[in-house]
Picture 1 (cartoon, one colour):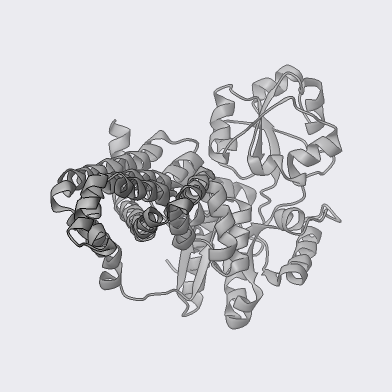
Picture 2: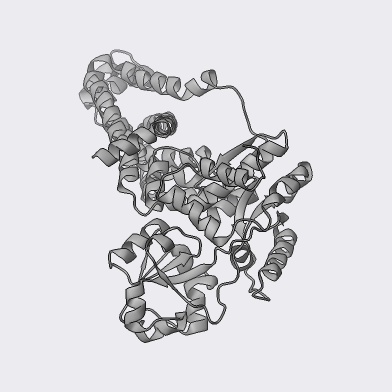
Length: 508
């Protein structure tokens, strides 16, 4: 408990910010869902032949996995809050739509006939009789929708939308740090309970106050989502730098920001933790971000779908640089020295027990071991697909998992072999052994700024600023910086600044 309190105190500001973001995203999605669902539900009560198909379609939409919806929306809306809100709205529609339709439809027919007999037309009957009587059922649908949206909003952090999911994902990335995960999960649960209690109270009194209960929800939601427009000024940055999940990308983008703002008059916004390679690359293509640190080997094999013509780092960089410019109109600036190549790692005990020295040695134990690989590694040629082809390996039991939890799975004995990165801090912490890549399956992976060509044309001074990192940062220096962030809980900004000052690239 004392550790959790310590984490809470050190990340108090981050907790408040992400909680507020979570609330705003959730409330805005609910507001849009209400504005869509209630009118449509009313219309369906007048055209009941199409009611079942429309409600059926909304039910099907809710069954689509949220991550798939987000991935589908990125090409249309980019990254950030917009696709997150669209996805959450989709998930929030069904309960409100179904309850609106059911609530009005199940109003006692005798009361409807009495209203008609009193001379009320369809509109007056709806507003004076049907809606007031159906309001408790409608409010119950809004309550259900709200809880569903608040819970699902945590995944929005994967595409840079913010919210409490940032803390949860950070905890997973830090080797399943329970305290960070709880710091995000507990407030999310409490927020859902708090909002549920408020809506439950409105639901109870909605039978008496009728349409005013729905109006209260709409007005409150509008006030919450409108606050930023009155409390913040337009401070759009000149550049947005994004990064994949992990301490290393976050350290690097902080270095980029510090160098650019030191050398130029440009302002820089950061979007760390944008998820896997595909998400971040799509964000760059769509113009949602202007720069992100990419690896030469990843650009070559994943984005260009080419094999390295040479295993020399300089040759791989030149091949990737040329290909990215010709194919995507993107510029690769000077790479850093460290080579964060893929590695296949195991414990020293297992390596000694089975005499494992090379990746090819895994063939003799492929039916006896369990491998813990990331989803990305299992799907890449410069990963398990290539291992199968080049080394003729077919491991019988593979468990796919997020990068942040594979080292725990290895240390706990749940898996015997994992994919790793050469500069990961846990390689030192756990004393892991890497198996030699005798066939040079994994090309060099030097980190370098990948930037949109039009961005570099607009701001040519960026090249000089960012190329100051060219040839700098050794494998050991990167591992040590990652260790400080992952295990000593230092700020990526502070670690980045400290390195730049020590190298004379930034004034103290």
